[in-house]
Length: 535
Image (tube, rainbow, N blue to C red; front, side, top):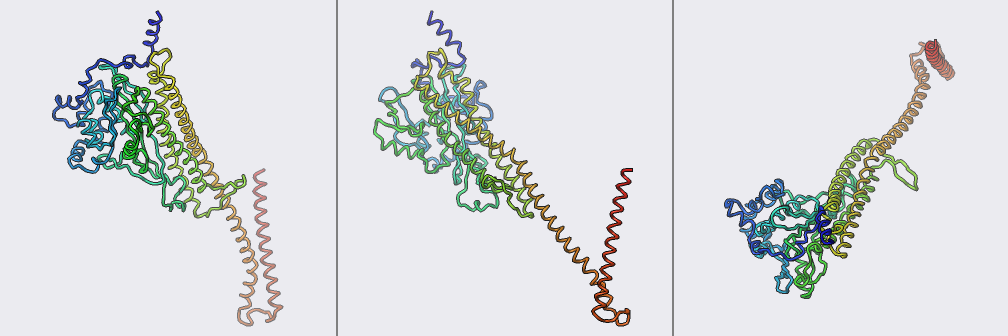
């Protein structure tokens, strides 16, 4: 009775790990050694390798845009040309292989493989092309979607179990992020239009606005797109494969280069390996340390989420600091000793400064939106995973739950994602604060300009008043000088100093009387209009 209840409870779970995966299944694994493209070539002999690999039936979830993106990134003509020319891309180490089983009789590669050697080792060239040409039916189904999402720079964490055909599993994660470095390292991988696979953006403008002398610094901050992708897929817990893609173009000195791992493996003892998927974590030799797929997937995810969290934390911290520096350059006020004091701008540059400030603000907000969008996508991927696929690892009442150790690993992963959610909130608050501060800063700039304008007008009025009085008092002198400059005998005045003084006094009296009559007339006009308005 207890067994029946447990089975009923297990079957009622919407997400659960099939107990069939826990034991080795009696399957013809030899049939899976024939690549999927070989099967397809018998049906469609006129198609190239990539076209055959992406060819699928209507039940395949791989969308049309996935086909288009993979076709564009890996056109057949370019692959064949590169393979035949034997260029440098084929000679550069790009892969590590580890083939292990429960016995010590297993193939283990202690040497990094070039794309050409990978092609030969797997059975038939060139990263994506090598995988496409060697993947069996089950792997092709998984790799089509996996390669597409890695090229698309998108976030995802999920477990996929096909509802039809052979029962298999695929544990997959894609973690996009931005790496902030003080120099630009362009991605050499190109689309057909010669655009790089991953974009690089100069973000030095955040703390070094146009016109600031910081722009002359030799090192500029650049934001690099990057992604880490992994998929663990197989038929049961004894027969499975793990594929791992990571972008390293932005760090030339990284310890995760294939050449570095190759050097480590040559120096390590036979019973010890550095696992590249777990960022070089030292583990028991692959020939003697066979893991279960869910355990391995969670450990890889834990290590890589922590790596991604570190990059995001650095980006968010730098954005907070750099925005403060950049904003201070444009701010109309400075804070000293807790008091806000205006910065005196040149009136001629006020409009230009305001225009530059608005342009800087638009660029910063656009940058923050891009960061928020990608980080939100990553956090949402975790939430979707916890809402569904987590049941494949742990579900109440399920007999196939992961061990307590793996459950702790799952808790660590959730804690790291919770910190990522906190970083997302910081970016959102930073963007909201900038949007809220724009009207205030612009108002402060206008108020400062109005204050400067009022001071200038007051100074101008004072100067005009002084000039008016000087002109007013100089009128009598000008009139007297004009009268006395006439020829002798024209005026009945003797030519002596007293005549000059009397003439000046008379002219002053005339000017003052005229001014007083003018003021009385103005006041009478104002009084008359006021009385008229009341009546």
